[in-house]
Length: 198
Length: 215
Image 1: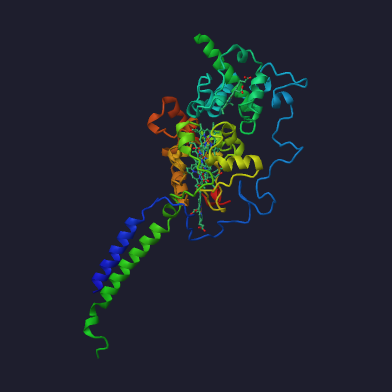
Image 2: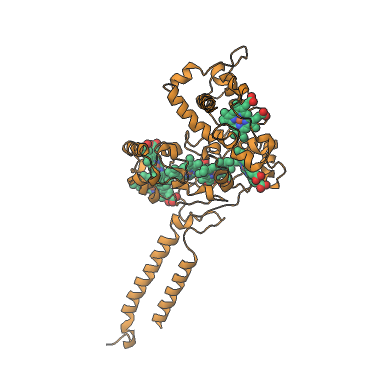
C-alpha cells in the first residue's frame, strides 16, 4: 500500500514538474516568497508617486530654471552667437575636450549611428529604414550631399540636431551638448567622403 | 512484552523511506519552484501600448540607445518619454488606434503608464552605466530583445546570477562598441577587439563583497 502511495506521489511530482517548466511566459506579476525590504519607503526613477499631484516621482524641470549640467555659453549650447549668427565651425573647446579631432569623429560616428541612421541612412543619403518601412513621405529626409547642406555653417547643423527642423524631431533632450558637436563633425566627414566618390 | 504488533516491524523502514523521498520532493519543490529562475523569468505584463521591440529594434534596426538614451550615463536605463515616440509617430501611423495612448499622453502631458518588468529589490544597488562601460552587452542580461514582440524577462536577476558573472566575467565581456549589438558572439571579435577585451578584463573589478551590491 505505502509503495503505491509513494509511486503516486512521485508520479504527481514528475507530471507537475514537467507541466510547469522554468521560464514559462506569464503576464501575472511574479510571486515573491520573501519580501523583506523589497519595497523600501523611497521612490525609484520613473515610479508613480502619490506625494505629488501629477503622480510622478521624477520631477519635470521647473519653468524659468536651467538644469545644472546645461551650458550657459550660447555658442556651445545653441550653436549661435549673441547676434543669432550660426557658429561657423565646431568650437575649439569642444575639440580640445575630446583630445583632438580624431576622437571627436570616432565619437560622432557612434552617436550618428544611434540617432541619425534610422532616417538618414548610414551614408547620410536619406535612405534610412524608417522612411523605407513606413513609406511616409514627410519623414524622408534630404541627402546631406547637396551643396546647400555642404555649405551650411556648423552651427546650423548643430541647431538642427538640438531643436529639430519642421518634420525632423529635436534631439536636444537625448543627445548631450558635446555629442551633438561630435555628430556635426561626423556629418562633415561623411560629406567629404562622398565628394571624393563623385 | 509485545506492545506493537509484528506487522509494524516495517514501520521504521517505511518511515525512513518516506522522510527521504518526501524530503527529497520538498527540497526539489523549493529549489525548483521557489527560485528566481522559476518565479521571475518569463514575466511579460500587458503594456498600455502594444509596442514591439521586434519591429523597432529588429526590423528598423534602431539602436537601443535611441530610446533608452540614459543607459550609458546613469544607473537607470529608463523607458523613453512620449516625446521620443512622437518624433516619428507625429507623422507615422497617425491614425492607428494602437498608438492612441501615446497621442493622448502627448496632448495631455500625462506619461504613458508602462508596466515595469525587470526590477531588483530596493535593497540591491544596480548601475547600468558601469556595466556598459565595462563591456557587458544588453543581450547578456536581457536576452534577444530585438526578437521580442513583448518584452519578457529572460534572466533571473537573482543574487547567484549576478555573482556567477562577477566571479568570472571573462566569457561575458565584449568590446564597448558592441554593447547594443544583439547578434555579437565572441567568435566575431577582430584582433583589435580581442586586445580591447583583454584590457577590459584587466580593468574590471566587479564587487563580490556584500556592501558592493547592498549599499
